[in-house]
Amino acid sequence: MPQIPNMPRVYDWKWYLQFYNYAVRWTEEKKEDGTRTNETWPDEWREYLIKYSENPLSAMKEFYMHARSLMNIDIDSVVFCMDDFGEQFWEIVYWLNSTFREIPTVRIYGDNQHQQKLQYVLDNVKYKDSLKIFVETIKQRPLEVRNNIKELEIGYGSWITLSYLMSLKMSKFALLHTYLTNQDINFFFKSWMQMKSHNNLESFEINLTNPEGFIAIGLRDIPYEVGPTIPET
View 1 (cartoon, rainbow, N blue to C red):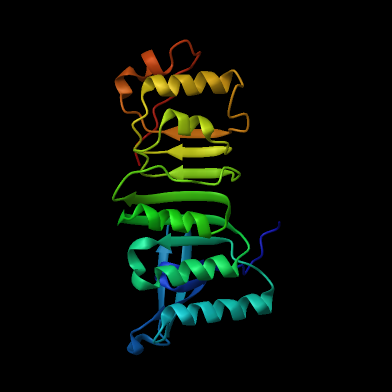
View 2 (view 1 turned 90 degrees about the horizontal axis):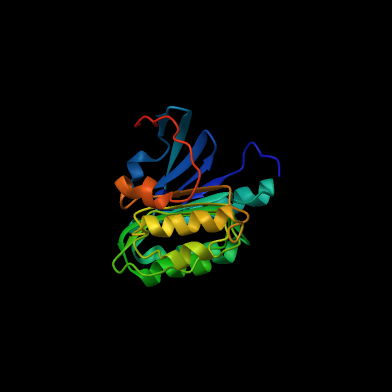
């Protein structure tokens, strides 16, 4: 689908709508109403119009629904920061579930969250193509994730096992902070190279729990080449 110049993005934890380089942000501070602010990144510049509301979430939802009815376009990404929602958490998840048939890209962030709340988001927000989870839960237990998406990234993967790794069917995935061993990675590589699993896989990233033994164990009986060192950023 071609990119639409003014396709909106809803970033719920900040209560703002982004129209690429122009955005509307809501605040509970009445004195800031009508002011403007700029933010600059290495490859992007953005201007914000600040709007006051006693209920920023409701104002954002109303504005978005009005914009969607005028332009007949839908959301393309959601960034969901669980730490900032409080009692509005359930309302936001319900709105996303009832309003959007599917969302191409979903990012979820949070610290010290309950496993059940994170799983509730995964069960009720209809992500389609890309899912990235950077949520540290109180108890690190397996998550149920749809396997028919294209890209998966898990930032806190201490619960990930070899069995879970072998069950993934995405074309791209990154698994960080896991306890997978070099033996596990070697098993995965051989299965992939022999086309016994992961036939759609295009890219794969994982942390090494034992970098010193990776070549001897992780790449055992696997042909490889050593490339140039990647500089630290």
